[in-house]
Amino acid sequence: MKQALASMEIEFNPGRYSEPGVSQSVTRRPPPTAASDALSIERAQSVRRALAEAPAVRPEKVEQARAYAADVKYPPEEVLERLSHLLALKLKGSE
Image 1 (cartoon, rainbow, N blue to C red):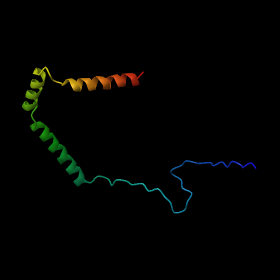
Image 2 (image 1 turned 180 degrees about the vertical axis):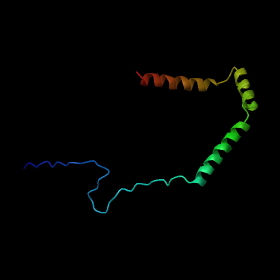
Image 3 (image 1 turned 45 degrees about the horizontal axis):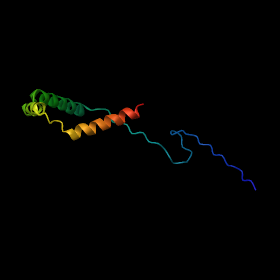
Image 4 (image 1 turned 180 degrees about the horizontal axis):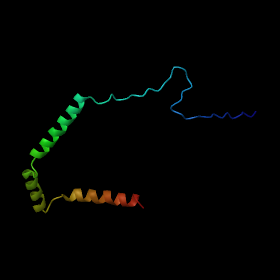
């Protein structure tokens, strides 16, 4: 006995639903108010002030970088080994 193969047709249309009572709601933001605009401007000014007050150079990081540059054992051999293996894997994968 042969069984008949059933075929199913699927129509993809996310904006249309065949079931009654099912709908897709759209969430909309309310228009900005004067109060929210003022807060936004205040935040932007606060960020600008913080950036202006931040030092251009962080002395502790400069000292740390100098120490790394002077250390012949930095980076450690293990780190270089791992990095070379990762680079080799990436090169093999890109061929």
